[in-house]
Image (cartoon, rainbow, N blue to C red; front, side):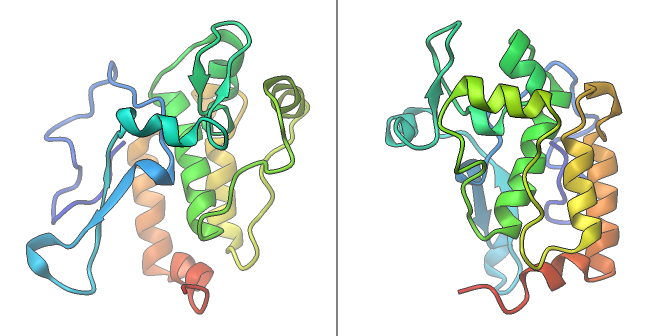
Length: 182
């Protein structure tokens, strides 16, 4: 996932390798830091706290019926849920859910869904997370682009980064969160 970090165009030096996938993009795996002690400016860094997964057994992770593995199914792309296929394109689906989490200030995706079968059935029928209250239309459109059924239609990390930069310049992201941070 390419993100702005400390004046560089990407947290990855050079082109993002297509063979690396995260498989668990979620707000719980994002760390905010203040570069060089500058206050008011935060840098988001994608991380993975794999050993802390036990904390999420009952709330964030569910058992996949085919593999019996604990997986973050509410953040997973439809092809990952059904076929076990993981790629940068499936990570983009997860990033769309991360954007939704941010816009809801930490909401739980699909809180009404209790199991794998229910989620897969809804996603196959075209159901997606609802637009968060106060979220700009443009930011919600970006989320929906990340949730396209066809992975080849989803935006690349570079396209998402560019679109987020545009939205920040237009203050479309700031308007989503302004006055809601506690």
